[in-house]
Image 1: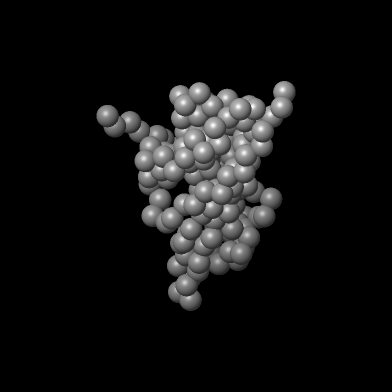
Image 2: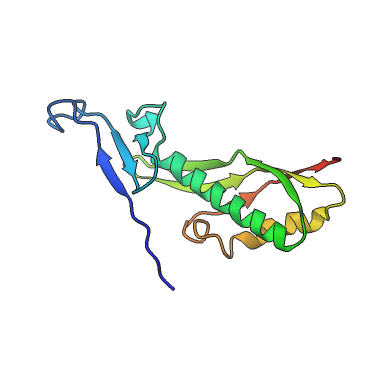
Length: 156
């Protein structure tokens, strides 16, 4: 079964003279998806972007982490594991060649997961290694994704 995702990207960086010179325009744009809040974006600050706005690299690692989280919650629920909190601080490593071409070379997801007392932590850990088989984003990237989960036991 195929389905499609749509988006609208609108460049907002015309400072009056368009791209008449390399430094005459801003590297900003909006992501607009019908019926959803607009996301204001910019290029990576290393490439002249606005550090206060999301950039494509931020969006990619965030999407990868969010997809992993959603599948983790689903599979944990199916396995009888009660997750009470989940937060992640993922790190993606990129490289830029002398030519200026760049790519991600790896990512590490580092979720901190609070689970109910009595949880089988071996099973809770094993779930992480099943997600790459089903996560839409993880199955679409061409770099290794590693997992370094931390589990916290809730005594409530």
